[in-house]
Length: 183
Image (tube, rainbow, N blue to C red):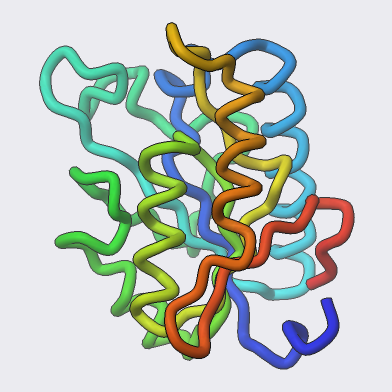
């Protein structure tokens, strides 16, 4: 990671909830959940803060709040001391305490994983750099579903290409595969 090692990092896991994971193609589900689980274990072993972001969907939404589908996926459940930040918009910072948690822990770099690629992951990454954070988007650790226009793998590849190098002032997004991230 080079100069990134000097930055204080946090792993931010966005919307890896039962109802969302059910929507994605199985090959993407398996790869992404495996990559996230490895990064989660590494983060915990190195004392890197882990923040879970959980979407509160309205009635009828795949992530309807306080339903079984709303729960964080059982393969990556938060530990008692790890923060879970609830949100109601694609932007994980919008009307949440995410920025406050990051400031309290003096975090300057976010390692972002989760879903959905074209909504919450994209929006949160872009917003983070405008707020003064450096972002590492883990190329093989975010997910989405197939749409009538593009397959999930195409959406993921497109966003990896589009977001890599996105910058605001001195801060930018780097897209790096999970296997190349050292904490």
